[in-house]
Image (cartoon, rainbow over all chains, first blue to last red; front, side):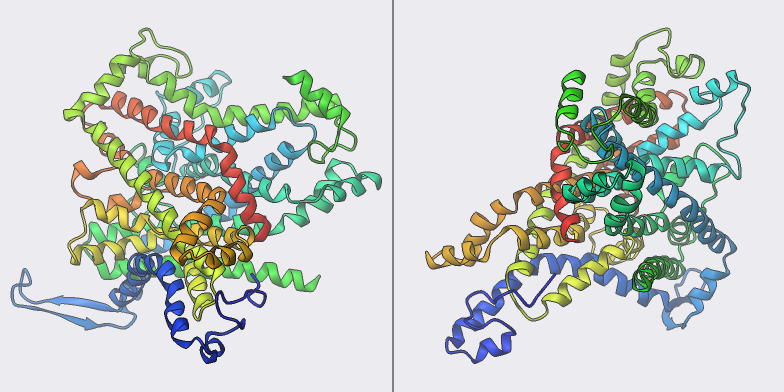
Amino acid sequence: MTTATRTAPGADSPGRPRTAAAAPPRRRFRTRALIPWGFVGPFLALFTLCFFLPILYALYQSFIQIRRYGLFGEEGRETVFTGFDNYARALGQEAFVDSVGRVLLFGVVQVPVMLGLALVLALLLESASATWPGFFRALYFMPYGVPGVVASLLWGFLYVPGLSPILDVAGLVGLEPDLLGPNSVLWSIANIITWLFIGYNMLILIAQLKTIPSELYESARIDGAGPLQTAWHIQLPLIRPALVLTTVFSIIGTLQLFAEPQILAAFTVNIDSAYTPNMAAYRSAFTDNDYNVAAAQSVLVALTAFVLSFGFLWLVNRKDRQR
Amino acid sequence: MTTTDVKKGDAAPARRRPGGATGASTRSRILVTAILAVAAVYFLVPVYWVFVAATKTTSDLFDSFGFGLGEEFVLFTNISEVLTYNGGIFWRWTLNSLLYSVLGALLATLLAAAAGYALAKYDFRGRELVFGLVLGGVLVPAAATALPLYLLFSQIGLANTYWAVLLPSLISPFGLYLCRIYADASVPDSVIESARLEGAGEGRVFFTLGLRMMAPALVTVFLFQMVGIWNNYFLPLVMLADEGLYPITLGLVTWQSYQGRDIEMYMRVVTGSMLSVIPLIIAIVVLQRYWRGGMTAGAVKG
């Protein structure tokens, strides 16, 4: 993303608009300066409406409360600024704090497992030993096209005793796993997420694997490196950017968990209505009708995503510098 | 097909990427293929199950072995039951999903293309600020904006309308990112300049040259956005109250919530799920080439 090499279209001198404005065709430049905004404008307008304003609005809502007077608010109501009171109330909900801890635990286990499997499949598909790599690649990517809702319904049926053929098969060998138990259900959700997104992450990793020049493989081969050594010393370091990218996306995705646990909740009593932070925020907004606490919870989720994503990036960069 | 593949691999080890030192030994080939096949089974299990289950009667669903056929084969009865139930509302949901995802993805791609093209090809004040802001938007969990967006939309009367789902679907920060990188790499300044010299306006340059040269990236942006919208659940759940506006995902969940009261609902949920995965599975497998193409561009430059 270099900016220095780009020249301003139409203007004789490259560089900042201010220098260009001093150039002779002044009026022409004025209208020219508006042209890029004509292209960016529609996107930007919608981005402002659907991203920027909601975030500002959530921030605003998270700092106010609406006081109603009278039994049904018929004696008037007022909006008061309450500082961090909504945040205190959000964090005061034990269920919300638990839900944050739950998704963090989920992420610590599920993200490495999913990305590890995606990496293994990507390396295998790109190795010389793979048969029909195109076929398998398409097949592994296929779940990405299945809506999370539908995937949860399907896996839900596969988890329920009495319906699940998987449990039937397990029963034949004497196993009676409880896939929807109070402790195991989190990992049953993890399985759904893993199933949905391995192929997607694998595809990103494969895309970067394909950019490794073949001379590198050639020289590794001449040095006598086997497939494992090649993977460890050449492929892994070179696809680090893709690994970092997929990790950040996965962290953000984990904090947003909503559809899968909500659908599975219909199959088990072990998922409550505030199982994940997003479910808690949804409950605050639509069951408790407390938009202000819901806004505070949404802001907290977004902040956690930011802190974790940037924390991870910082960690990665620091390691790079130490090298 | 296998034999020719093996032979080619032996003759020219560089044809396919690295791994084995010289081609690949038969043993490692068998081992790797076995692992790949096991993984394939894992990915196929739920899909296979739903296709089998959709052929069963309600009692077979509960009584027969899940991976085998039931006593009766009633797939077509089930399908027509899904399509006619409640005045054929499943059709309506399908059309809604198509409207949201296809129209939404088309417009989103156009918007991202125009903005990405401008960010790549014009030098203007605020350019990096715009890019940075939008990329920051990628990091904000979409679900975190859905709630406040609902509050905002309900104040301007947009909640519970087609617009409520369509408008937010038109923004693809990832698309903008990919389009900018792609336009940077594949739309040469010289081509734009010579088109200008021939008297083409800026808009025409973009629509006739820019869009065409960015086509591979645009296909990728379109596909990702379409799947994203098709699979979306939280946004329509928050925004929509009227069943007639629901996409398939939300509709199926509504049916699922009736399961406790009406056992016949199970078959509708199962068959509806099966019908809803067919179009996107076809899209993914058939259009596989394009998913790769654009993502490589992103990975190379990113």
